[in-house]
Amino acid sequence: MASIPVVVKHQGKKHDVEVDPSSDGATFKLQLFSLTGVEPERQKIIVKGGQLKDDADMSKLGLKPKQTLMMMGTPSGDANTIERPKEKIRFLEDMTEAEAAQIDGATPAGLQNLGNTCYMNSTLQTLRSIPELQEELLQYSASNAGSSSASQLSQFGLGGLGASMDLTGSLRDLFKQMSETQQGFPPLMFLNALRTAFPQFAQKSKDGHGYAQQDAEEAWSQIVSQLRQKLKIKGAGPSDGETAKDLSFIDKYMAGKFESVMECDEPAAKEGGEEPVQSEDTFFKLNCHITVDTNHLRDGLAAGLKEQIEKRSEALGRDALYTKTSRIARLPKYLTVHFVRFDWRRTTSKKAKIMRKVTFPEELDAVEFCTDDLKKLLIPVRDKIRDIRKEEEDVDRARKRQRRMKAGEENDAGPNTKEPLQKKSEAKQAAEKAKEEDTEMPDVEYKTEAQIEEERAASILKAKKELLALVDSKMAADEGANQTGLYELRGIITHQGASADSGHYTSFVKKQGTKDPVTGKRKEEDGKWWWFNDDKVSEVDSERIQTLSGGGQSHSALILLYRAVPLATIDGENKA
Image (cartoon, rainbow, N blue to C red; front, side):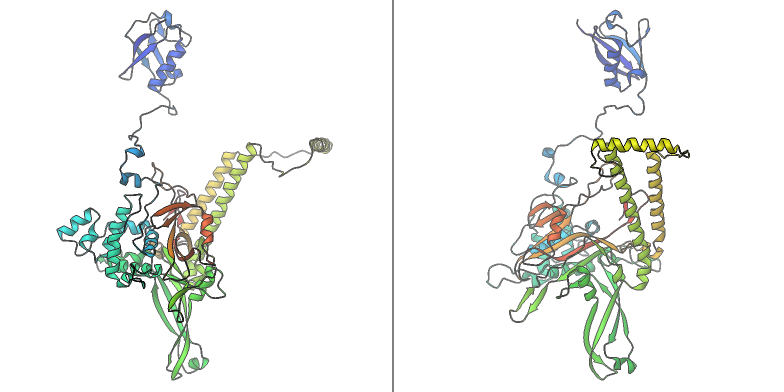
């Protein structure tokens, strides 16, 4: 039997529907549900003789082609309606290179080796892992950028052509260019700016072929020092009257402060009236000194905070040994740690590499290196964070256990290897014993899973509020400081080889969690890392990081970049 085309009017819209005369009213309602999203039980369709019923025979309604039927009803709030996507779906093949590179989770760009420039490439990739640095560089404009030609070149990411002396402007342009490709990019302009600003990196190779290999730590330090001079955050510094001064980006996010005491080692100096000398110093990295007793990062950092200096003592009237003991008075948000692996050897006139294995943690507790005043502020916050973590881990384990129990994979009594007959016998004996005792059990009110979950969530929420209340007001106002005393590892520069003047540098950067397209917040990280080996970029597991502790000529950590563990916020996300 041929179908009958009809028109159904609903909320001002007309829908063309093919009616199968051999079907019933319920089938017709399902057709309309697919078009309108109104569930069959919520539909009211007016036909000849009244309202259409589910068991109505469609062939007996006398429907005519193009006949108009009226339908009333609205979909329920939880209806699974099929809607047109709000944004047009774009396929990777249809995107430009820049658009594809900016997709969340896309493989980042590598950097081409322009002749022994792996030291620079690994340094740049690690610095690029600091999102605040990328954001601030986008706001940067050189003082001489007023010329129209330089400004026009900068718009195309080629500001380095117009101002080769401006290392900061070249870094801004390079990072922008790297964000628009997934290929290995040639950092020609930045390399030119680096060699112009610091001629040591333009040193030729001893064999006369090309440029010499350089130390990545020296490149890191020089770039950071230049950024400190040039990259200023407007109005972020201390107030001078009515207006706030500009603050260096490096001073805000990457600089710490030492409080030091220098005292003569000889008791005679103290007896002669010589007082210890107290001082304050700014630092941009912590040195991990490596000796025969250094096995872990903590050992080297502790050794680096004590220094022996020979100088003249006025009380003794001669040169004497002094010990300078330093403690950290301000922890920056981003902490750079340098393994002092290269030692100058006079016999070979080279920087020889100390091969000793020195392990390092993915989470660093820096509280023990701080002043007593800073410890008092950080210890309660650090301990509270650990308590919250433990509580969240307990909740997560309980949820997993509950899921396994529901799936029949776990028994509350733990693993049981008894035979079925033995189980039945024990169950029978237990039942008989219960009958004999006939103990009256008190009424017990059992909580539902939802109630237990709610209580756990309320407990964690309370703990997070207590955590935020523990943070000192002055410390909370310092956005660029570490407010927890804990650090998480984010980047590593490694060296492979026997000396600083040879070998190969690479870098590892931890992957960020993907962004939620709706909320814009980042999801939990998967623990994987990007390995930048010049223009080759690959993904590696966290186990690979544990192999970078040294112990030979293979890849060993030279520079670690740590980021402050953030405070937990009330909504469960982290406060960066």
